[in-house]
Length: 260
Image 1 (cartoon, one colour):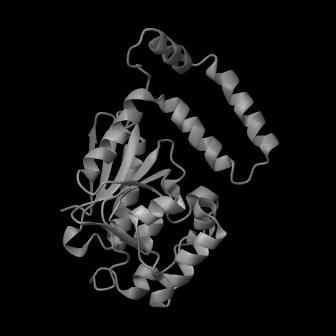
Image 2 (image 1 turned 120 degrees about the vertical axis):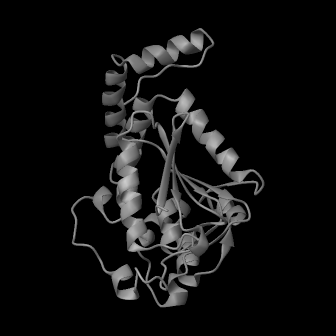
């Protein structure tokens, strides 16, 4: 079976980490498979919203140190240096043109949790158990997590999760602003319904530009952000999406936005 499954339905592409017998523990093969799957659905006009989740009872239990494919030296070996904030080992997940939702259906640890940090939106089972785990295994904050977490949940909360390596639940993650918690029962159906609503009701072009705005905001001043918004608004005035969005609202019908 492939390490990552891909399905596209109702405008939603679901990328499923697929080693349920190992709680989707991370290997170099899975790393490569996810990048290929992501590239595939980014190029698919039928895929308007992306969902990353795990098969079985876990999202991703972290690096698989027991796998014959991934001995410790191979699993931790750094790739050659790359240029660009959104062209790093996993940050390409932030650099796409389509919304990415991490549907944390169960345990997420180490690199498994970090993967979800690169998503635009995190939905988690209220009872899902999560941990950075690095400090408790003799590691450091991997893959940009020391940069991401303070921006997502604030410096003190980030220090708490990274320095203690403690286990926390999706419900607590929601109180920290790390994710939205959904009931355990029917979790994946609810997460996919959320994604399907975005795919049906939101302009792919609008979502893509908003993603660009959010990425740019990491290094922008308010003046820069405002000027960019004004430039993009001028483009909106001549794009078919705005006309369709307004017309569908006036006609009280679902919009028919063009693909990217």
